[in-house]
Amino acid sequence: MANYFLTGFPGFIANELIIGLLKESDENVLYCLHLPSMKSKALAAAKKLEKEAGMSKKIILLEGDITQKGLGLEDGKKEFLKRNIDFVWHLAAIYDLSVAYETAYRVNVTGTLNMNHFCEELMNLKRYVYFSPAYIAGTRTGTLLETELERPESFHNHYEETKFEAEILVEEVKKRLPVTIIRPGIVKGKSDTGETSKFDGPYFIMNMFRRLSFLPVIPAIGDGESVVNIVPVEYIISASIYLGHLPSGEGKTYHLTDPHPYKVNDIYRSILWEMNRKKPIGRIPLRLASSSLKLAPVRKFLRVEREALDYFAWKGTFDCTATIRDLEPAGIVCTDFLQTVGSMVGFYKANCENPQYHVKVD
Image (cartoon, rainbow, N blue to C red; front, side):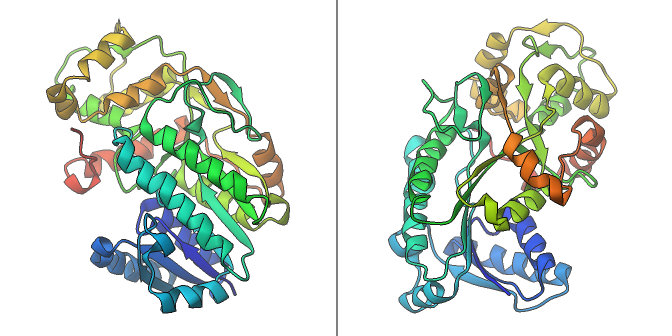
């Protein structure tokens, strides 16, 4: 039996993580922090997850806010958690690529600082697992190592920048706490069903293809030679649960990235074919496409964030040697992206009319 404290509930990855942890042991109890404004959604999610796991009273909801000192928890609850929490999983963050700096800093940096302080007060902490994207690399190029935390000359957006700043704070407490840092690539839905909670990241491409489906020809964008690292959510869950409990995982940083990622050309062509049974014809410069997305009416029509195109030109790859080595005994591997495009597009097509899946594009 173990007591877990999780942030980021009821987000997609947090929900999947809860199911995974409950499957690990039916004795586990999960204390899930959620914003007061998310109370009704958190209650519904907890009820659904417990039903799916065939358990009850295993998910304990706590109202709070990582941007506040003490996480906004009542004193009595905080004292209980200090004595009883074994594992902490910090997933809460602002993931929006177009987020304002002040908002991103408050949640991603100040929130993580408060989480660090909370963890340092826990009496029986066995592991502090922190989620930080692989793309904190910003504009660095070449092969990026799991052992590196180097500040790039610049970042593509405030999300990357503030998550880099937050990881620095977590790296510092590695000296005092049993920390494991998880750096996923761009997360997509489940490999088998395609299920996801929102259409962002690679789903922006689908939004664009759907809006432009009336055109006889759809061109490629840019040279398509950049590599985009996309990973399925079930790989993130199974790998992070294993590594987050692995004794030798303490003090390490892991790239949960696809060891065999595809170029933009391959991803673009495969999604277009699954969406519209078309192949791209012609090519438009990336700069022209990016300039077009600076216009709000264009962004809103296509449902594509301008910042998403930055990854069409980025010239970097993620080394995941330590991850592959440490996961090998468990047989946990990342599924091939092109082999799962069909389920991904299928789920999108079945739900593209549902506004709850779409990210607001301003």
